[in-house]
Length: 232
Image 1: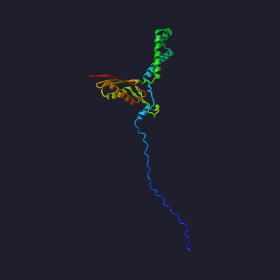
Image 2: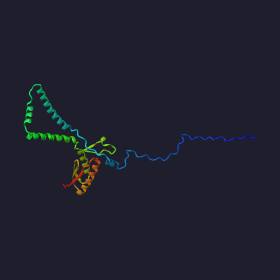
Image 3: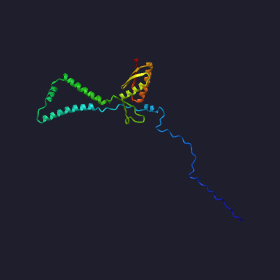
Image 4: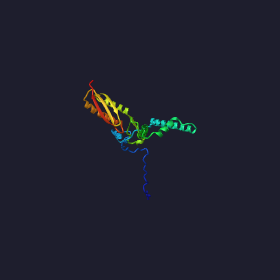
C-alpha cells in the first residue's frame, strides 16, 4: 500500500517589490497662488478698502508760540515776586498793570479789546486741538485686508495735480492744462487747439475720472472741467 500524500503544501506568494511604482493618477492643477489675481481684483480691492482720515498735525509752531509767551510772562512775574520777597520794590510795569486792572471799569475799550483777544486766542487753540490740520494732504484708502490703524497714507495736493495734468495732456487736442486740486473739487482748465471743444471736454472728464480712481483717494473730489478754444 502506498501512503496517503496528504493535503497539498501551502503556496507561497511573493510580495510585490517595494520599488514597484503604482500607476499615476491624474492630478488636478494647483490652485492659483495669492500673487496671481484675476483682472479687476485690484480695483475691487480698492473699492472694499477702509476709509481713512488725514493724519494729525504735530502743531509744533502754535505750541511753541503759546508756550514761549506763557513762559516769558510767568518768568517775569515770578522774578518780580521773588525780588519783592527779598526786600526790593516791585517793578514799575507790574505796579502800572495792577493799577490799571483795579481802576479801569469793565466796559472800558481796552478791557473789552483785551478780553476779545484772549477769547480769540482761546477759540484758535480749541480749533487747533479739535482739527487734524495738514489740509494739503489727501488721505488714501487702505487695502481691504489691512485694518485702518495699521496702514495710513496720504497724497500731497500738488502731486495729485501733476498726475492729473499728465493724464489731461494725453487727450488729443489739448495744448495746455491747468489742474487745481481742492478737498472737494478738482478744477481743470484746458486750452484746445483743434477738435470740437465739447468732445474734448467729454474725453477729459473720462480720462480725469479714471486717473482719479487710480489715485485711490479716500474721498474722491468732484471734477469740474472748463475748456477754452485757442486758435492762435
